[in-house]
Image (cartoon, rainbow, N blue to C red; front, side):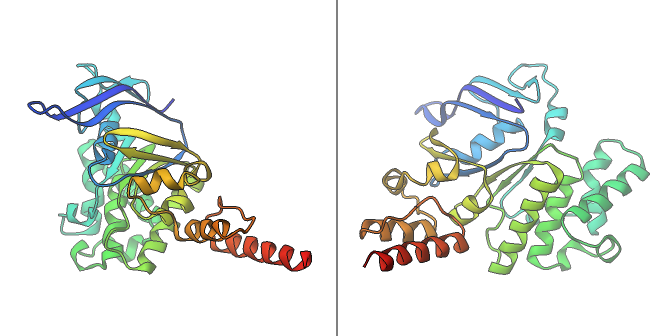
Length: 286
């Protein structure tokens, strides 16, 4: 088990006893791609910050890579190398004069040799699809928004985490930038075996990328399962003010109008094939 939470509660207002997390149990295995959704204030960001001990719970037990982070003498340095966190608008974290300097900052803090640092910077830039020779000496502040985001992610990847957490990574990007980011996350997950945990309000992003979806409300996990299992709970999601993916919404509309059609499809191509199949069967029945 890579990450395990047992009865985790976090109270951020002791006087009024306001809970950001309320008795949460959760297990995450190696090489999962977890999508986390929920309205503002549901506890998503607090939850993921527990994974690398940026926040400690008020009560409960957390185990990350066999380290009990809730114990006083826990090796939090190892935990933060294991679990990398990319905040929303990560380009705001850039501060060095060059791309190389920004990506090298974390490895340098590990007291690695310059050869090892150089290798890590090269590999991290390769992972995010930026050419080392072209970008290493450029100012990160003169790059496009999408390139800045890739450099910020590369800085986390240079620490060689086994888990990569991203909080709304596509916020503010144009459609091309969002698709480029999705391709990057797919590659990191499938080709490099990185466990990814993604917070996003874009349901299409969640369904296209995730192997498991967690829905949060008022500090609790209210749904947890495969995308096709979670998004069949249309009424529950709507009661939480969460939108269905557009494709799923269309399929539900057709089903409500009497079509015998699947609603657990999340790609445009599969949805079109299913609609054509249903129309064809209706024509043949005439």
